[in-house]
Image (cartoon, rainbow, N blue to C red; front, side):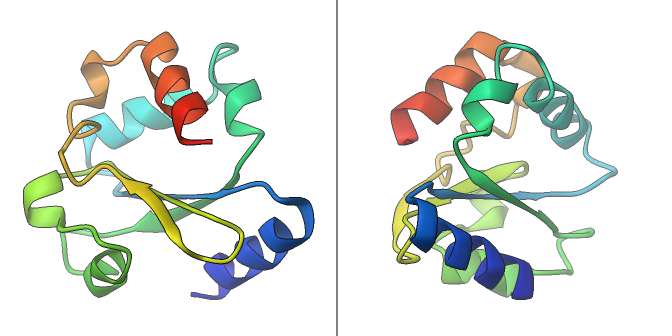
Length: 118
């Protein structure tokens, strides 16, 4: 919660949205999305966000936090993303599971999602 609050405070000052990235280190798609975030295609787009990574463990950590932002991790899978305005209002979520198969997404596709949500 403290990391989200800090990101929202920065977002309120500079107008950049906040990206909440719910995932876990055991999840291959989460690991792949992390790698994709560091590619030359995605990194500049991601720099337009304040990013907060949130560990869900084995779906036994921060699940209620995800629910507060409209995510149902049982149906969305992980990684799951939420974009917040600087005021903390949910702009969009990946409740449709669109990132649960992040291994199949190209950097161009990930950048496209992030650009659209910005």
